[in-house]
Image (tube, rainbow, N blue to C red; front, side):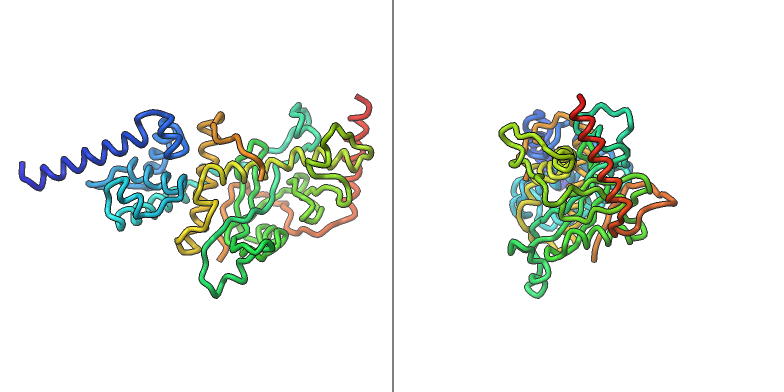
Length: 356
């Protein structure tokens, strides 16, 4: 064997030992480094290979590529840190990071949740009041780094440079739809309008709806709470009970709609790269956000009892797994008919609760 071949073998086994230590040694180390168990990790890189088109090379196996990528997202470390941890050139780390990112985005049809309505016979205490509800939606700010000339557009009402991400999730905290790229200065309702107008945007079939907070307009397909009534969790402390059908509706609405806040909380708790701005171009930052949402869904399915669930609530790209419907809602304009329907629902809920 030539000297070059011997060095190649030594380098290969050295890098395999690094991957084994970070990933395969135990589930505890895998969770700490990659946010998923060894079984889930193996299934993920298999999907990336068979569906996402990710390929290994003579010098870098697929599992090492995915491990580097997940470690960057989980701990928000720079390439120069990864190159020393994995003993790779910085250019190599960057190239394979983008390769894995592209392959994960290719899995969006597989990983985004298909909406499922609440059935009339549901016994879920949180959701049984909202028949035909598909889930909940809201916007969240994620800090980004943009050129100085773009900072005024990305500055939100708190003065932070951020992008406004619209997320739609199911009752079990899986993302159904994600709209990326809106500047932090944009209102949540503006993003929702954009999502409905897009060719492959958010589909809300007639007769179904999503829950949302009071920052949005109560309109056909989107059920908001009553304004001017008690709504926040702190207002229901000390065993205070609702006195009107509006208050009872708001209490139950909050209990269900809060699932999207929990979803965002878990997402940011898992992936440290979402908690502070990164140095990637804004387009890449948006794709990283989407990759984190897809990985969130993957982990929810493969690890239903994930330990990281214990959190405290806290050009535009879009990704959607909602099915196509011939009769879908395309506007968010309020109507008397929808307001009356909400009022009838609130009175029905309140009377049912009082008569128990």
